Image (cartoon, rainbow, N blue to C red; front, side, top):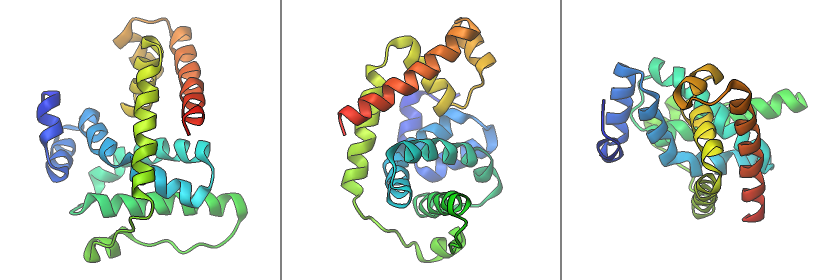
Length: 187
């Protein structure tokens, strides 16, 4: 078990290695948090919708839980950029039935190509999201973080928090709505 301070000091490569060996989602959560502005920005660029982009950020995190175990990743930031873009292109393809070209993360790994369009705006959006999460009432905050960032199921959250199952569902639903409202009001 790593201390929170120790985890924050780890490099991306160290976090990936420890995550692969332990499966500890807290390590993956720390790694992903570092690049949420990038992922959100990529999603916003392609999906052109803030709510869909926020949902995509969570869906991409869910994909990482398995895909990071199966891939050897040297440059996480560029690999994640391409993963996020492909996710969005797939989503657009399924919505509109259009053909999109997917870019393999392997190509980006070899060239370490990154597009930094509007990075400061993306970082601002993540800062807003973090501020808004902090503004949630403690029960909502705890449940939202466990559900979305640590990928815990309802049963796990009830045992971790001691909250009733119906309350957990309510806290997650209300927390998500309050987070969305807060982001829009500060957007």
